[in-house]
Image (cartoon, rainbow, N blue to C red; front, side):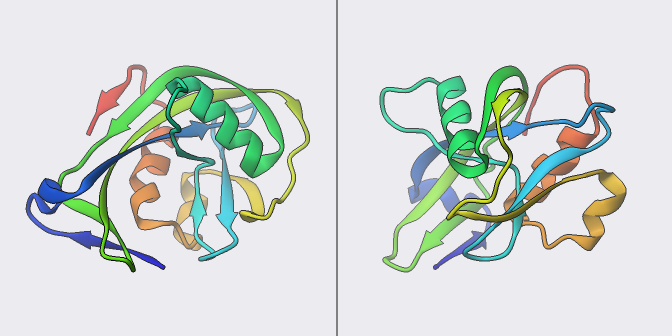
Length: 155
């Protein structure tokens, strides 16, 4: 089991972990696809950790496929998240500072389905978010993606 720990520059001695996540919008661009993790029942953007030898966009495409059954094309960068004031702590004592990239993604094929990792999915707008059990470190990313900024940002 993992937990999030917060503190001033807490990530100073943590491992770095890169990840890519997809902002997949509905036709109106007012709602975004979220998936519910099977292990902790938290709602998140589809995506995950980058593997050695793959590009950021390849990571995004692979993770979306594994988690949703959708084939996507990764597009414009929405934002980069790299706070040094939060780490993911693992039961074995390891800690990781996550550096997460959110990319806009367009569905090009596949069928949206639940998987071993994800137990539910849906499209949600800003007004829906207070009713969802959002993952703490995804909440900011989800809110930012739904604000439809015109240029990418770094946080």
